[in-house]
Image (tube, rainbow over all chains, first blue to last red; front, top):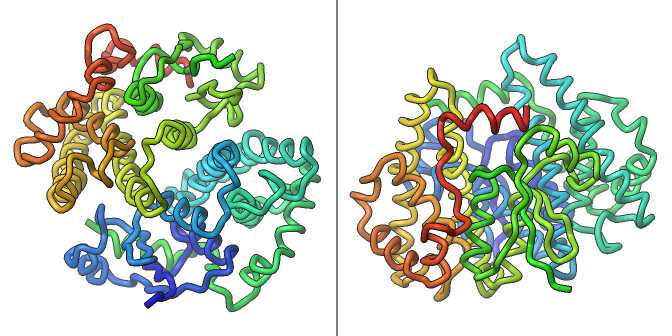
Length: 222
Length: 221
């Protein structure tokens, strides 16, 4: 009885989107359940589905997995996207954690108070341009390979691709000083599973809009 | 040339403490280099030692590792504190991520400005007693073994003990409703490497004192 993984979250990116990317990149089909009301969420909690009363929730291989990083590590391990040994895993972990810090800023951005939006957008641009993208530009330049770690497609590549596209949505010219990342972006776009995920009709979610923000606040209201 | 791991951080718990706990639990001796002023952080940055310009940074096995979780993952795997297979790792990861979330609340309490302290305390204790501790009490009950996952010590056990002790610093009777966590605490504290770490003179760091907070903030801001 090997069902597809089932994702429970809101109908939007949030903390589930990196998981959707990773499953898609691994070529794994999945189902989704969307939270639209507080009642649905309260029921999940009451029924004991959510270990720490939080989503994302991914039902996979008989487990009700929660905590984004735990879920991603499991998927990466299972689908061979986590490097070939401990040292490669260490690199992948470092890169993924750094990217995750950048993505956290993008995640929180739609919830910024109006008077902080411009400052927060500047911070995203500044961090992407000065702290995070230079690291990966340098990694790719130094080893001259297509992928970030071990000459093989990994979780780190998927997450970097997601981050590049997410930042470009807010800062369209952000890759102008990063020729290696431009090439990387093109190469990743052509990986068949990623190419499929980038096409209309895929499970990829659109950027958060006012309706999404409203739904988040409604569902998670205390 | 197998040098001891070298930890770069300020002389306090912060985000490095879980790493100290793991190394100590694994019986691994380590050295520490303390940041005392902003210039110390700047130097590490200009030397190119910090991948994302941040500490914690741990020099280990020829790498300059950054990012708390990456470092903790590496140490846990290397010293066999990460379960025996992918499924055990999944459980350990879920538990540990919940603990990281609680650790964030406990660890940052000492740095809260005066006007936010009361609210922060209430939220912190509420989450401890109603979200996190009940989960681990139940895990211990359902699993029925000495450890949280499988049949051997893992990073989940080490990290749970760490946050139990931190929570008790803020509310001494916080384990009152959790009998299994009480016996867990006693049991894990008696593991020789951990017992040693809990003794005075170890590299375990004390709770940040209010008067030291400005100095720490000045290093980073």
